[in-house]
Image (cartoon, rainbow, N blue to C red; front, side):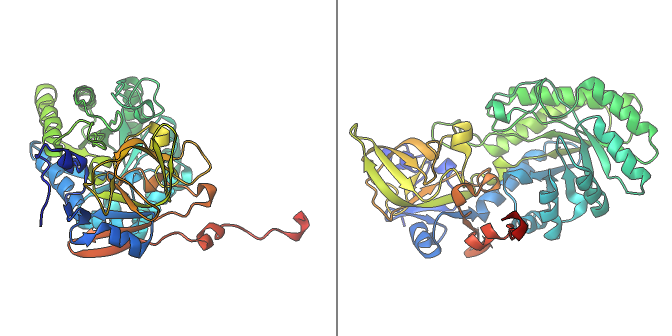
Length: 454
């Protein structure tokens, strides 16, 4: 069996750029495989759009984080950002791997609890949490509530007076840094809707300290996602640790969790920076350790990293069926497939770039530039604006890697689109995680029209 190594710098190997495909993916007799499964054959059998998740790739990323965290002298943990992609079966995978979960809504928390995920490993985030979510979190016994603004403390104090057991509180710090990423993914600058300034943090900490039923145990920051330049992350860690040390000096001895967030970039395209996940996690952790030794001079708290994309994006593979091929006068092709903006809004929202291959002819010679578009009534419904692909015909299967994060979690029913089926590859087993959505699902929330309205 011939496999293609990412170190081989040939046109054929570059067309199958290993760092952005699941680690179980390989080419055999020109056809794309995921472990022992012929991808085009799976798509023909299971239908498209279809999402496949490679468990080995996810476990590889988790192992990289754990290896990098060994550079921290104290305890450490990994908390998965559920917003990247989440459902009940995956919550069970996370539980078995010993990870924590960041939930930002009643829905995410509800899914985690329905899956039996330990509430003591759930942290609740969000810039505008509802009283319903607060009561839900308190009654479930979640580990921590991340306070995003001063007004939340009034809500939590009122609930504690009503007899609710309030979780441990972390304060979200805004370090006033603009991350080198798309503006929509920046979360730590001065005008961000997330978090509090240093002065607000100090005031909130005092308010918590004076309340008999509230406990301050952590400090959190997050400057954005899809970050390849680590210098701003280092600076954010420095400012976070300095504030942590200041709070300790002011008497807040209960602080025991330091969370510099997540946000490490993941390459989606061969032109994107290539990163070693382990090396970059280790660089961040070593920087935090050195900063702690210089500034804090106290026992090390638990260092909690909060990745999402960098854990799950590479594991996901999206498959589509070609429905139409048009040749334009300028020689460029428009290739229409049966998915697009409804299951992957990132190209329209962020101008995100992807690559792709013909699943049954993965290394075939390109015919020329093509634009991959979806079926919705929007000119912005496209997956790839320009890519060289071999000849494609109606019924061919197109595979797009790096589809594991912020696709299905942001999917919609626009134009009545039905959300795809999802399968998880565990060793040699293909496990259904989510069935394909049906028209009955679209109708399930509709109520009968009262006769009086006619």
